[in-house]
Amino acid sequence: MTTVLKTVDLRKSFGSLEIIRGLTLEVQQGERHAILGPNGAGKSTLFHLISGLLPSSSGSIWLKGQEITSLASHRISRLGLSRSFQITTIFPKMTVFENLRIGVMAKHHKRFSLKLASRQADIISDTDALIEQIRLESVRDNLAGDLTYSEQRALEIAMALASGGDVILLDEPTAGMSREESMYIVDLVRRVTEGKTLLLIEHDMDVVFSLADRISVQVYGEIIATGEPEAIRQNKRVQEAYLGEASS
Ligand SMILES: Nc1ncnc2c1ncn2[C@@H]1O[C@H](COP(=O)(O)OP(=O)(O)OP(=O)(O)O)[C@@H](O)[C@H]1O
Image 1: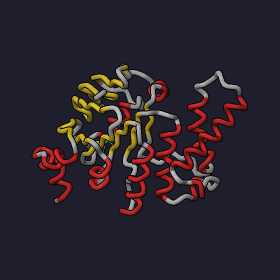
Image 2 (image 1 turned 60 degrees about the horizontal axis):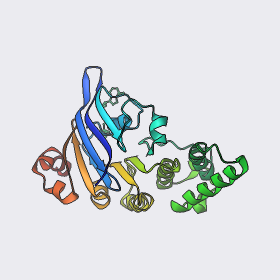
Image 3 (image 1 turned 90 degrees about the horizontal axis):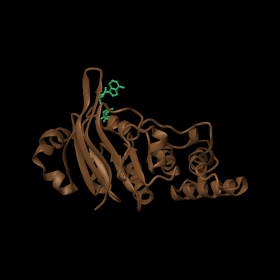
């Protein structure tokens, strides 16, 4: 097993409030790893630290063996880490194709050696391949703002994939969805992360237990347990801290 992403004794304070409190996490290459935890546990903050959106107060973060703790987010992205946001980040007045083309262009602009014309042809075919992958061909030229909620979330996931990263961070991709919509997203996430590494924040137990190879439980800024779904389900500390609370 190769560790692809790691945090070591990570801490983050906002003023005098410590939100991430010595958090150590290891994500293995190729796994789908879910972070489960109650509201306010600091899960989104953890993603902001890993993706370079916020600086950490102390501790370290490693991607593919390279320390990324103080790197800017665009440099972390270039090393192969892609993320989606809990808040919708698509452009509503642009079409599905135009939205995705922005992400794809970011990837292609790294390859300066290519001639402009062939680069543009590549951008179009990569964008269409992505649209096919998320099965939004029928709404390719519709404005993103006119899509259904679950289609918008699918587009958002595709935006995270567009930059071509092989370590994908998704923050609550099924938030606010019906059961049917959630299962559509679960199926989509499973397909599009095939062969990649996924770190996923998710509240929905059914989603977590059907998608994750391993689960880490985050409570008050710390990981209190990591393991395979069944071991997490049986873990007494987890039951007391989270699962008990969730089912009450
Ligand atoms: N920029 C900030 N300044 C001050 N406090 C913040 C900031 N960002 C987050 N917090 C606080 O940190 C705590 C953790 O927030 P965070 O969004 O990381 O939790 P979460 O586990 O993702 O919660 P949820 O499941 O509700 O999204 C919250 O109490 C929040 O108010």
